[in-house]
Length: 180
Length: 245
Image 1 (spheres, chains in turn blue, yellow):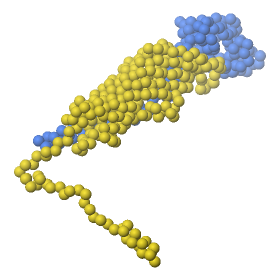
Image 2 (image 1 turned 90 degrees about the vertical axis):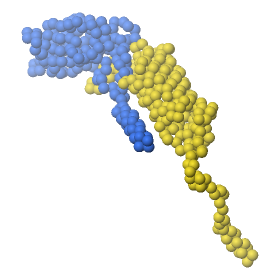
Image 3 (image 1 turned 45 degrees about the vertical axis):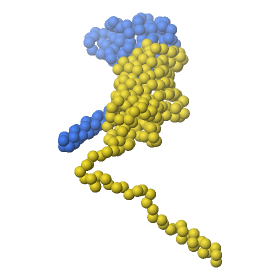
Image 4 (image 1 turned 180 degrees about the horizontal axis):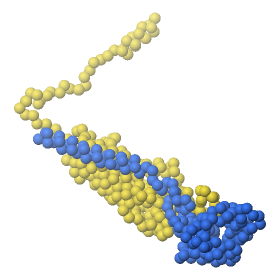
């Protein structure tokens, strides 16, 4: 009888130890919660553009010394880069009004070796910015709805492909393909 | 000369030891009648309603002006080891995050059981318990202000954005959760108990404000992204003894 009781007691002790260690491990493993740091970068998506060869449309083609400006602005967003892929920010101003925002970008390219070969293209983009909640550490981001594109001046851009671009809410793939 | 002798006599008296025995010698009746070995003294444990208050919350309020709260605790003993326990109260907390500032406030209740696994000596009533709770809170949350996150670690911010002050309150929010509680209770004075416990909590369901989320729920504490949370309790309570068993 006593033996049985002892065995029962030690069994119970076992269970309690198990529960205790379970709680302890929960405390240990959840000490660092992922929402303490915002790991998304950037949180607000940018407009991603890829440049392709106009003749061989499956192959990306570098743009020589590409600079991107905002129309009527002094600061360049991108300055003289040789690249086939860029990400540019969109202006989120007036995102509370739910109105269409229009901005015009100037894409300037020039030959690396020859002087005064600057060619400019103007691209007007219209969208409705809207806030979107992400998480405690990242806060709200801005997404861009009803995106439309218009080429105002295309000295070097032959064609645009926006596929079925309507909303910019991630940067997983290029939003615009430019053939040149 | 007289003073000196007085001094020595006093010293002598100071170290004089009387050996006394204030307890009567116990006559071991069992040893004499060794045939009858039944323990005639059975200690009866008190059963009753224990009510108290969480004293950590007002203290926390003194040091942290973003927090305010009050909690009443109660439990009722139903068997040797099992207690039905409940807590109810009010909490308010301001969450100042990197990109949002909000305040949640409201009332809550928790109900469940405590299982005491401590083997007490005779007349002691201490507890080392494991418990389980179901919690429910009704609250409102106000989003005071937020700054849309347009930061870019590599390139900086090209289009700066200003903080938006809206003070938007959403009423009628709620949260349901489950808790695993572990703690100790010590009887510090007759029928007066101090209790310290910690809880690991898991959200079952929440009603969040539209386009935002509940960052804090009264009774639950800060809601982490994984829908889990922690809480602790330091309470003082009084046992109203109703019967002895």
